[in-house]
Length: 155
Image (tube, rainbow, N blue to C red; front, side):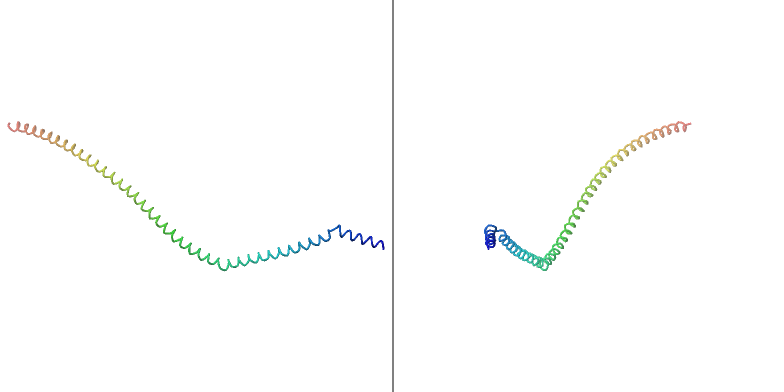
C-alpha cells in the first residue's frame, strides 16, 4: 500500500510540477483551431477572388474589349487623317522648294538672256563697223577703179 501511496504521490507531484502534457494538449488544440480558422479565412478569400475574377471575365472584360476596339478605330482614323495632312504639308513644301528652284532657274535664264542680248548687240556693232569699213574700202577701191577706168577711157 505504501507503494501505491508513493506512486499516487509521485503522480500528484508530477501533475502539480510537470505541466508539459497539459500544455502540449492545449498547444495542439490552439494550433488546430488556428489552422482551421486560417484555412477557413483563406478559403473565403480564395472564393472571393474567384468570384471577382469570374465577374471581371464575364462583365468587365467584354466591355473593356469593346471600348478598346472603338477607341482604337477612332485613334486609327485620327492617325490616318494626321498622316494625310502631314503628307499634304510635305508635298506643299516640296512644291514650294521646286517652285523656288524654278524661280531661281528662271531668274538665271533671264540674266543669261540679257547677257546674250548684250553680247549680240556688241557683236552687231562690231559687224556693222566692219561692214562700214569694208564698204568704205570697197567704195575707195571702186572709186580708184573708176579713176583708172576714166584715165584709160580717155585714150
